[in-house]
Length: 390
Ligand code: NI
Image (cartoon, rainbow, N blue to C red):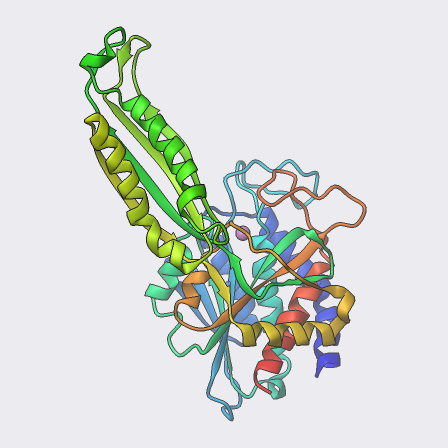
């Protein structure tokens, strides 16, 4: 079956590159993937899949029924949205939508989902069970997975695989990670209410800007003294607003930040830990405060058995030199984890680095990929799906 999957994927390569270039040229922002969704739905229908549109706003599902000797359903999730970036590549299929670019490779991901559906739809004997292809909107704003799950996309699903392109891994290579792949990412808002006054007489006022600086410094230092060093936590205040004039003490400061963690224990304790530090500093200096901590996306925790299944399938497909075990997790975030709250799954990285060329990182206006990665990704997904049912 491996030889058949590889053969079909190779033959489909020109068509898959055409699909990817079409998607790349017509990027759409998170939650606005109308043309992309219609295009994806069209390709799925033409391969004979049962298609449902407008799932989780602009999401699409394609379903392929097996011969019912196994009533399980395996899902493959890809995402479809682009970023508010002006593309600066010289590609002939560069974005035609000003200020919007597929700079995170979601054009490739959608192509991989479609390619895998095309391959498996030509091999009905490979599938005793069902396949559900999930084309998700709005990954970049960490909302789309939740929209689709709330719309019932995981109903009846037993396991799920996902993929993300990675420019620092060489093309035709697969990056596999056991355990945590990405971090939990939470949103933080802190509002400090002090009391205004003359800049020359701070003792008659409550200086919200100075208190904010104490909070930022204390939070950073307290991570190193009170959080387990083996369970990384990164807290970044990325936006701060307060004050109107150089000689007036600010009575109000608003700070926004992101909090990343990998270990469930840290993740559980962070909201109270932050609130205690902020309120105790504000109490000490007579300010009032509000702390809003909201959990955005959990950590992607790859299931050991499914990761093993993927690893063996990839080693069998291409040999060991094209499989990289990823030793360190990322503190980036990925809403694939929202599906993992429902079922076990595994997300891997697909190398797209162009040989002997400077490879720009994800979200860069000159981000490019080596399209030879597409066949690698399709074979990885299709052969892993086949192995899942063995
Ligand atoms: Ni991405």
